[in-house]
Image 1: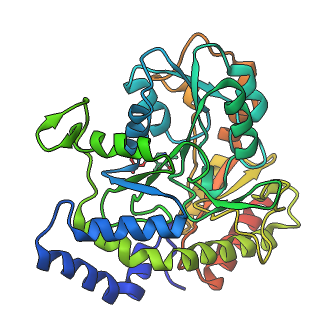
Image 2 (image 1 turned 30 degrees about the vertical axis):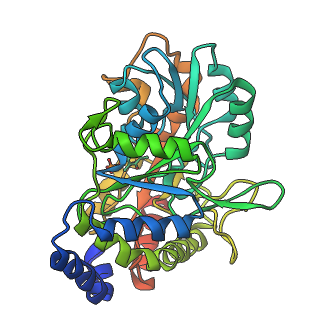
Amino acid sequence: MKKIQMVDLKGQLDKIKKEVDTSIQDVLETTAFINGPKVHQFQHNLEQYLGVKHVIPCANGTDALQIAMMGLGLKPGDEVVTADFTFAATVEVIALLNLTPVLVDVNPDDFNINIEAIKKAITPKTKAIVPVHLFGQCADMEAILEIANEHNLFVIEDNAQAIGANYTFKDGRKAKAGTIGHVASTSFFPSKNLGCYGDGGAIFTNDDALAHTIRGIVNHGMYVRYHHDVVGVNSRLDSIQAGVLDAKLPHLDSYNRARQLAARKYNQAFKDCDKIITPSGKAICQGICDTCDCHVFHQYTLRLKGVDRDALVVYLNENNIPCGVYYPIPLHKQKAYADDRYNEADFKVTNQLVQDVISLPMHTELDDEQIDYITSKVKSFING
Ligand SMILES: *Cc1c(COP(=O)(O)O)cnc(C)c1O
């Protein structure tokens, strides 16, 4: 059996090495290392793929979130509602911009921001909602857009984990994750579903004026060379990374499909374990079916019932199975973001999830032998 890895970037690269080499070589030949034609080519191809008017590449997914918030003109003291159960980048940029983060609880089934909790958190100072499409599946965007319309709020999608996922509206219309709110951010960190070989990120929007504002912000606030109209940042996707991404983009759907197939095999293996709750889509799609494209499984995350999660992690590691706990501490309990305003009773789900979740290896190169081995070890631990 091949060594099991949490993410197998080498196995994936081996299959597309020619395309990646050619694309990188193109950049070397042009020596246009910053803002070269490859960046524009990738930007254009990603716009086509997503069906969004504007993709603005930048240096990483955290910058993308920050720049989106700067572009919307959010001001110190504005409240921004986001999920308590996510990676810290989301709340970090809210705090960095001197906005006020308002963390709220998530759903136990899809791990995404809870709609009732958002409603409860809204005050006259609320200016934006940041749903994070966690582990590869969209938050309940229709309900979020409704709240946003009612209260005149911006919706910023943190789409670092769900690129390529589809969201289906009640009327059957589909849209790609990251094209539904006012603006979205994504990350091309190597382990993300569309990853480069370094850092990278992008902002998406259908709003022409906002896209224009953001294009200036990523480039020192310049709209005309050496004329600085607003305070900006220096945040660029470098051309070599754009070359890698442009070579990988045509494979994104098949990569996401491979993840979905692996998830389905995992689900199948665990279906009779009553101490394991397997990931499932929301009512809209009932999880993984042949046509289901709502979940792109950035992570394959189980909820355990009455199992010592930390002992399972040790056991799996002893058996050469890497695994992850995303995330072990709720953001509202992190030193940097703790606040007297928070009430533990409002975070029942997150407080439980941080104890119960475990993420198994998930990538595009998992084979049946590896999945069988992983699931048999998980089951043998759980069944004692
Ligand atoms: C990875 C990630 C980010 C940050 O992306 P970087 O490119 O590492 O800055 C932000 N939000 C979420 C949910 C992420 O998973």
